[in-house]
Length: 78
Image (tube, rainbow, N blue to C red; front, side):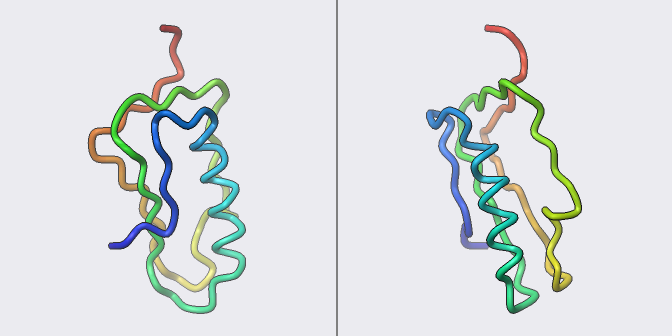
């Protein structure tokens, strides 16, 4: 599936920004096409919890896929 959104591990706060952008993208959805968020390889530091809610689900029944081959989400101290 093509990436609707992409986030690189070098982008501080990138996952949180992608989650916010996903809500906006889904709110504007006019089809039930699946939506893929591509999480780039590497360590994605989480400085606060990444909370996904009902707003992060597809309003027209499509799937929302977070694809992160080679990605590590880390909330721990280095």
